[in-house]
Amino acid sequence: MALSEPYLEDDIHPIDIVEHLAEYHEWDFDRIGDDQIAMAVEGQWRTYSVSLSWSGYDESLRLVCTFEMEPPEERLPELYALLNELNDNCWAGAFTWWAEHKLMVYRYGLVLSGGQTASAEQVDTMIAAAVMASERFYPAIQLAVWGGKTPKEAMQVAIAEAYGRA
Image (tube, rainbow, N blue to C red; front, side):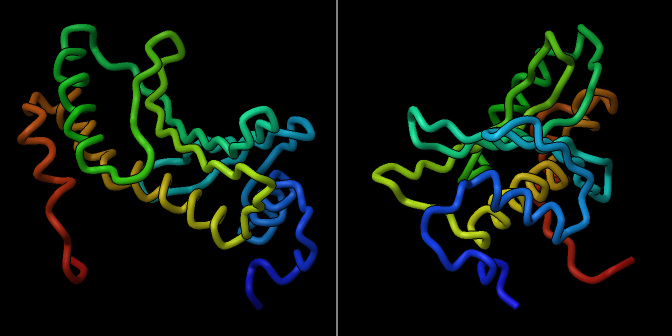
């Protein structure tokens, strides 16, 4: 069954689609309001907090994928340099560091102007891409912040493609 089969009508709220996906994938979620949902998505490295919100004003579905992190103050220059490297390797979305909340953040916005609607497959792919980007770059962040590696050295872990299983 295709993810979008339950949505044969065109005028479905994007957060309703996200809620359906969270149920489908059996993710823990909380419908915060009509226009926002938060969920926990389990990855290989950690559990990611993923929230999506709908803005009717600018007709966009905003995704924020976060994980907690408390880098040592002296390693912040390396973290900021690494963020530039990470974002150079992200075609959709971008990473940022929210120091006040001690969160590494991946953000993406899907613009649905002119009354467009998102399909369940689009939203599912959007969430999967956020988690995959976080999973891909998590080891590089760890190496740069706690492993004493330079951003270029740390990025070699994320850039290298793994083939097979060890």
